Each structure stands twice: as structure tokens, then as C-alpha cells.
Image 1 (tube, rainbow, N blue to C red):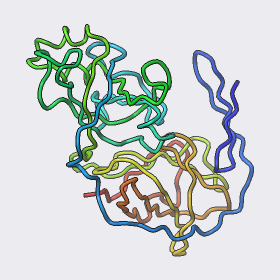
Image 2: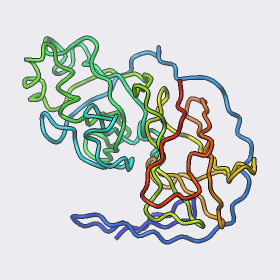
Image 3: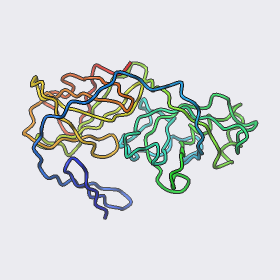
Image 4: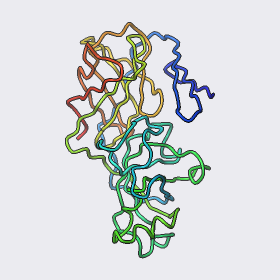
Length: 281
């Protein structure tokens, strides 16, 4: 049993067993207005230079990797995240802030599997998990991709099996915008949420894709309260009783912001997902 202390004042006890259980014990903190953020209206540098990394794959050779993962998104098949997903080493996971970011990954010329097996464009993946050990350790930049994503590095497609057989390859990567085809940002209320401890999982942020700051506003108070990252893409707030509806304002790591007014209704319930009417461009 491992104990992790989080900045929201909540302690998560992870039961290390075949089926991981989570028990949340919270110390009540008084919510206070957040200090003003130095928000910058800018977007990811999608024309950034290619950087070196390594890549492997896991799960089925035609599969979507594992359900769930360190970002907390849960089952991914049939969702906008799809099968083109990847776990990344801590240098890109960034303690969960990297969740939801998108990268273009392609084989490095001259590297293992980079000769006549790969396409020039590579594949776009979204970060849904962390891989802390093996090739992901010791400060390396590494992508551990689903089988479906890894095989899309190959060209022509008939080279996929030969590339999969390489196991680990040298790649190049760069940050790119996320696209979800009209999908709006969704807020999944944590199963353990109450009016005194409120927590949401945030997903489907377009463009930059990730989150670096989240604030909540009760009703029409115009008083924004800073939320704290719980783990992965989960954010939480102690205080209360908190009065819904809740508006949520989010900022990405590249400084873009968007506000989802009244995203969580007055009759919200734990475990429910509420889709907003906004997203990043």
C-alpha cells in the first residue's frame, strides 16, 4: 500500500493488487479566491523543430494499448482519443500536466527501423498514460505507443510487422495541435465528489490539448477559486458547501484559456459526465 499526498489536501491510498482500488480520505480546506493568473493568449508552437526520442509499443499489435492509464481517461475505444495513443516518459508526462497533449512521431532516418520501413510523416498520438520504467527511465524521452499507433509509422502498410519486430526504434517528435472534430470539452465528476470536496476529470481539449491551471466559479458569484491537480487529468477543490451550477475556466501549458460557463448543473451527480459548449480553436 502506497500513500500519496496531494495538494488538494486529499490522500489517495492505492491498493497494489490485481484490481486497483482507490480510497480517498480528505482533510477539509477552506476554499479561497485564486490569485490572478498571468494568462497569455497564445497557442502551441506547432512549427517547432523535430526532437530525438525512442519508441516502443505494448499490448496487441493491432490494439489500442491498455484501458485507463495514469491520466485517468478510462476506456478509450470508441472515444475521440481512439487507438492512436501513447504513454510517455516522465519528461513528457510532467506529473500529469502532459495528459492530453498531442505529438507527431516519425522514424528517425538512419535509426533502427528508420530505413526502408517507415513513412515520412509518421503518426499523431495523444498522451494518455505514463511509462516510468525501462526505456522511460533515467530522464529519457520515450514514447510507449499502442500497437495501432506504432504500426502506422510503417510505409507501406505491409512493412508494419517488420517494424513491430524491431521492438525499440529511434524516432523524432514534435508538439502538434489536437483535433476532435467538433467535440466540446467534457467534465466527468469524480465518483467520490461531494459538495465539500469536488473533483472532475477534464478531457477532449483541442489545440494545445493539456491543462496547467483550472478554476471554478459557483453560480454567478464572479469569484474564481483555484482548483488543484489531484492526479493525471483529475482536478479537485476542498471547501464548502459548494453551490452549483459551476463554471470552469482552464488554461493550457501554452497559455491559451477558455471558460465553460455553467458546465456543471445544479443537479450534478458523482460519476456523471457533462459536455460543455466550448473548446479551444
